[in-house]
Image (cartoon, rainbow, N blue to C red; front, side, top):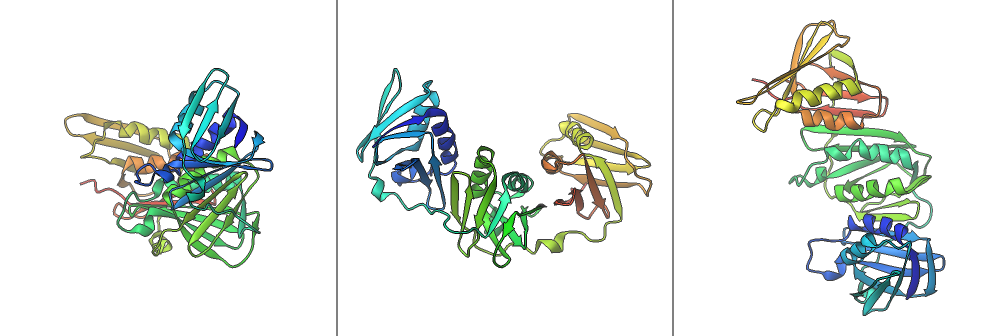
Length: 365
């Protein structure tokens, strides 16, 4: 194989592949990327046997067709540090030579025929959605996924296809985020699947590099997502996702509209004097005023006030400030609506028609 490739284009693809390549494995082949020439460019493939990525790189001049398999981290480091506009890659099953204007590197390779197959999305996808819409859905939910929870089903993001609507839902047991968007096209029956957090992170990483629509294939054991020149495939998370609609409060008595930026600033400032032992911000609603406060033993206290449209009975409730700021950062609307019942019940935040966030309160006593 011999190709001349645009360095910036290759770097973009290798950055995406770095999120897929297995870092902790005894199988050296899973630490590699496969480079395969095609008629109009080169395919770059990576997999850890759970998540797989294949990308078509067009900014390539093929001098000699072929196929090589080399260590992803070494290739990525060389391409990253290079200052050349293009690089020449030449190799076989034994090694790959990378040449710039004033540099030459040789990386020992492996037999590409031993690399696991990486799926392609063939035929019509089950759903097509605008890139920006899917990016918003992911941004609004991924942060709420459980981290290494023994309840494996909540270690992923639930994707629900209902007609021409796509909903993403994530929870860690203490908070729940749901975002709903409209699809451009939807075929077949309604369906749902739990996509691993790592897979969603890879999709999130490549979406800024694409435009147009994203095609999604739903199946019982595999998800395939095609975004521009990128195809991401993954096994699904096994198990049953919680009946999340049952935990969304339906009888909140208090609804307060808040300026997103002002409320986010107030929460951030009030949280400056919290610590691991007192990880809570108190929200005290009074007549046309909200006072946010926190207290850290042996450190001090913080109080921040903001004007709100509130003329009901005084109400106090506590929240983990990180849980609030995570949601407010991705709300994407000038205002959010906060719905409350009482200090011991979950709070609900809504941003526009598509974003809902439920968060458990913190005991302030």
